[in-house]
Image (cartoon, rainbow, N blue to C red; front, side, top):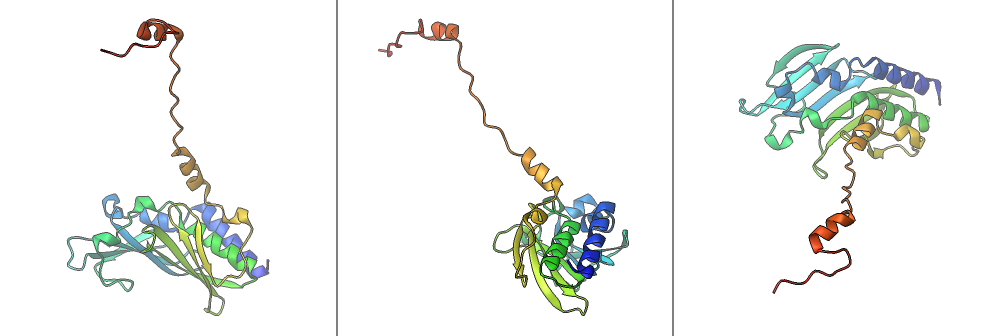
Amino acid sequence: MNFRACLFFILVSTAAAQGDGSALDALKLIPKDVAKRLARIEAREGSPVPERWYLLVHDPAEERGLREFVVAEGKFVTSRTLSQFADSLKPADVIGADTVKVDSSHVAKLAAAFAAANGAKIGTLNYELGRDAASNVPVWKVTVLDTEGDQIGVLAVNATRGAVLSSEGFEKSPAADLLAPPASVAGAATATVKKPKVTPTPKPGVLKRIFGGGSKTPTPAQ
């Protein structure tokens, strides 16, 4: 791993540990009823944390159905009905904040791992979150840029489960343990697995009361 990639990976890990400046941190700053109508998240030039997060929600009260909330340095800045990232939003664009289980910090760690595996000198990250038209699930797309601002590659990550869906521009993949979903996501998936129901075996006394004897075959009703 080259020095630049190593430094960026340390910055990503530090930001994730501090839990400061991530996309989910920004989401906490807008009302919960508004967050339920989340449609997109955008941010540019993160290193790894961007200066501003743009949270786009569907607003049925607006003609174009759009409202954008801006969060900078951990503080709510403004809301407006215009956005550079979308002209309008529809109910079908809504993904909802509850479906976003994977934070931007994890996506940044994945990007750093892919860049390191390919010996790339990572500079900044551009973040996009929205509904994938093909799979109909929320997907993070992070564009990895080098120190000159040129594109190195693009990662697509399932925003609910944490799986890497594609890694355009990266010839090599990092070690499997670096691709594992966040512990919080893995734990939640395990907790939701239901155990099969076990039907209790009736005791012999119960069989006798029902059939009039454990070895006799019930007589069909006439």
